[in-house]
Image (cartoon, rainbow, N blue to C red; front, side, top):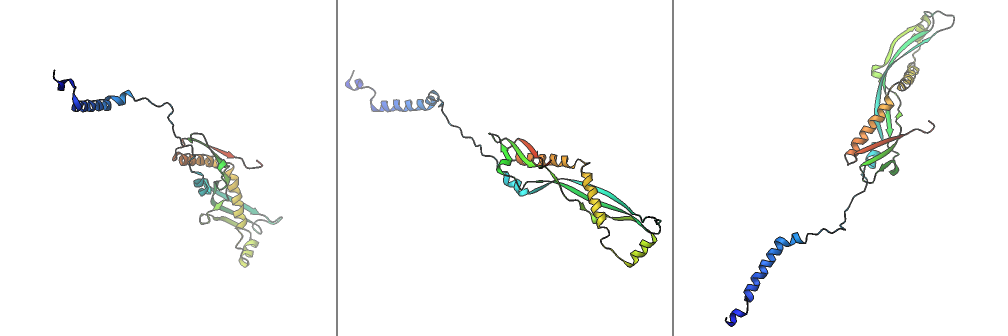
Length: 218
């Protein structure tokens, strides 16, 4: 064997071996050293959804409305005098509506409580309240009026433009009384819960519970 053969593969051979080794490491190496680090960190966002401002912007939510048609039948008699001589009877038909509203203006940060993952929320609200009756004057008015002779004569010489005011007030009182016999407040609570469930569902809150506080003194 010559001296040249005893020196081994030489620089060129070593370079080829190195290239083959690098290729093998690139193919097999990642599988051999793919060991997961047991203390990896995970980031979670527990910030509550920004909905309080949107609720405050609602200020007063008209949650439900009840439509009414009431008749005020009032008769004024003059003692010891027949009705065809003195006295009157009037029938007033009033068409109107009464709203049930929920006040959002006073909400604070404590009014909305989120769980740790922000997928459940409890909202504390004031109970729905009844608004003033609104009379539809275009469809309301005196249906019938009977007056005695003396009253008819008195009407010729005097005109009282506010004669129907007391009838309107009485009609409004009848509408308020009618609210107690309706499901207006219950419907207002249901509609408020549906609205808030839809609103918070849009920001990822799956479960919404609404708690209505009873007015003080009730």
